[in-house]
Image (tube, rainbow, N blue to C red; front, top):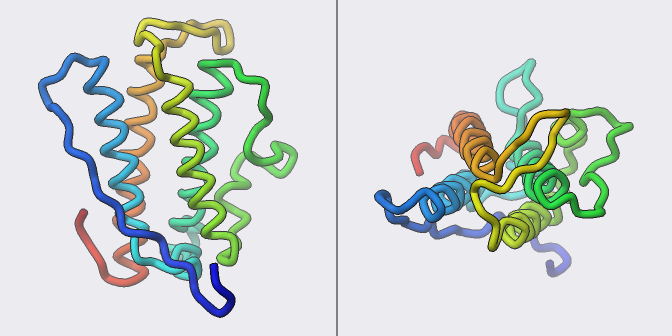
Length: 175
């Protein structure tokens, strides 16, 4: 970013998908659609706008959601599914909701880019996997299929939050 310039979340093109595809195509494409829908909610906003809280007493912000979604992308696809030898995105000693609670508008571009990178790495982790692949989580088997279903629900829920926050920030609705 050039000194004196204010970073703004970029425009996003939402992918279309085959709504009658086999689930091995349908689930990743539906997750991609929900991911891009979330990014559309952020498009055109500055770091300061992304850091604006919705309605008191809630501390929910689009920037907090960006940070949170990056964290869950890493947890589910890379740490749990692929058991990659990487640490968590945020220090767990700072609390489980650190991603929502420590909001710095000057780091919005960094957080946004981290989300994009975690999405890329999540897709890379899932590439070539079977929806029937399983891993152990607390003594229970979880499948890659379950991760996709969980993440689609995660994004769908947070897209609803993002709708309300965006409307509060600048009146924009839809997408």
